[in-house]
Image 1 (cartoon, helix red, strand yellow):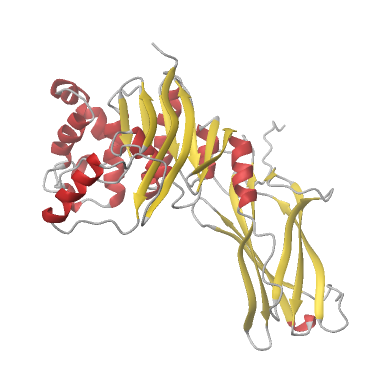
Image 2: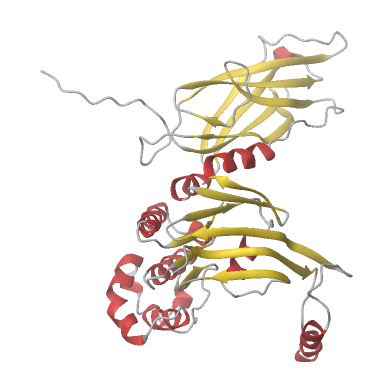
Length: 397
């Protein structure tokens, strides 16, 4: 058996903006047009656009490949092509093994059937035999954690319950290849951890995994290799930490409109050696440098300093810092260079920094810049949590 479980070779996919069919009369000509026209060329016409452009990569058995990128970049389209839901415009896909996919919440479920009945339906779609489904039924229900609702029609399920049952079925198909999209984000934190542990166990069984997620922390834990897709183009594929670093850095806004009366610009995240950083470690000291322009006296203003965790939007801190210690550099107005020094007392995860200028006499926000800087924290000591408190265990007496 080939060591390569999945391979994409120069895959392109085009779509048409606003394409929709309101009747069978519209659909039938469109089918004939797509079938007999030269739509598999590299040229675009009318409202067509490339959703994927020359995507190539391999996934070996026992390897987990993460796929990251902003919304609309082509991540889900890639998974749908791999799973056979979509056909590529050009290019070749090779799948060596039994494939199981969890791409959309509720996909493969019938709304009027119960959870138990949908296990038979969805399991059959994924290639399981009836006797095999019966044999695995109790395991599937137990893993999903929704046993008391299993004989309820799924139209009464929440999106989280859909995700629980869908992943549980996909994970018990005994796949050789598992495709998982962002659908797990609708589940609760405890079930997400349970799914992550299950996928980690798959790697030890030589099961290939492709994991699409905006949760960079989960990607970092599960995947040794990650692909970055932006605007349909494979920008980078390689070591997960390096790919996440490039993704974070590529999203940093290096400048904000400096022509306005109030602005925050030239924001950079540095270590204490004044080197640019995007990967940090607990107890590390960092410095955020910036340039501000303000039409109010500095003594009447505050700088808002906010950090959020990217995986769930949790607010880590929200400070209003006085500008009294900031010296102006422009005699014709309040313009200055400044810095905020802070400690990275955080556990592993990815974080964003936002800033604002606030004039407290008038209770007015003068300017705001959201997600002006990004960074990830790497550590392998904690399991859950936010804050690094340096616990030390020792004997007494």
